[in-house]
Image 1 (cartoon, rainbow, N blue to C red):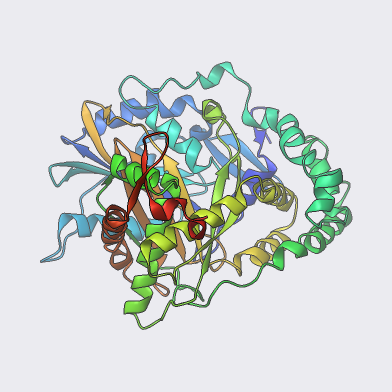
Image 2: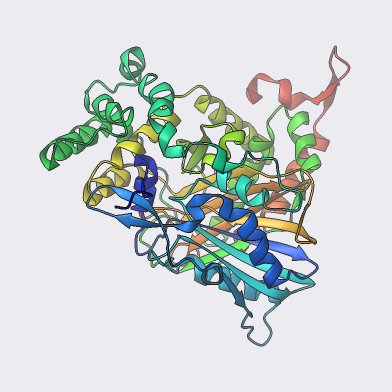
Length: 491
């Protein structure tokens, strides 16, 4: 390695090696802008904004277990910002053509000889431009990437100047020790039934990121202990078998809907004494349930599990990049037909996750897996992924529309990657007063995710209508609520 190379963190190494032939670990997004965006202006903005963050000029060099960030001496902005013209078949709309191209790129690997990101600019799309963004998950998580990308807008978003701070890697030991190692020792480890010493010993390595493992034998022993100790988590019951679960073919399909007014969602949530997330996730569950029903897969009595990322750092530290999030298993009640009953079922499941150590434990397991060989890491992740149907994320964006090189960023969509044999990625993105639902699926499991997407708004409208139809009572605070929200059955 060169003097300027930086060792990749354990967690980021785990995400780097999570690529599989049928599931690439890329975050893929689409920006829609109006009026058209100029290619030279885009390149200049990225050079002055995005390239302030050194990671976007660095390629990845992998060794047996460790990986390094290394400056790309052959870096060329035009390799990473590509001009495109959409190929449209007769009778296909521009939107459909854009979705098809984004789907194709979601299944196309990035070039590991250079920094792991690329943007594809369609200069003339509808009444403006479209940009397809691909960034490997090892660079950063969705929350950090969204903040960094938004900071390149006109006027910036107030993130600290990255050059004035130490790298994320330099902070890894202290952060992991405070946030992961200590909470998972003593009573916490006992309370969650992790009685072996493999996780704790593995996490102790994380508290000393410069401390190498003694040799490959010790590495194998650590891997064995980790696999044994996380077996308790693997005892989670299987989620219901559906058409969405099974082997994949690697062909991706993306879809998204037009935004719902966020204020309308907040109003329903307030009326039902639920969070915005409860409302949105209930609509997602309803959309999936109705899609399966139409395909002849009766959802009655069924539930599916989605792994939900939980952010573990303040937004102001997004400049550090890297991955700092845990994963929590959320069960979606796709078999509940009544929208009000379903939203309360979602709320109950979300309440069960609050205060849980599962996200921290998941982060620790990912970090430990970054110490292991690829085969051990795959075995570790598969123990959890076989219990999962989908990966789901919710990313908040700016409340006001941003300007980018003089164009208005009118819509921002992205899709969360999946790993193993998980073939469904669900994204909920809020931006500029709206909230929208995006899906990326493997075509073997769901060949037309737009049919799920198209049910999202009707599901919300049904919930809104039923909320308005519920009998309302006046509370002492003079705030009215539906009776259902205060009944024992709703708790």
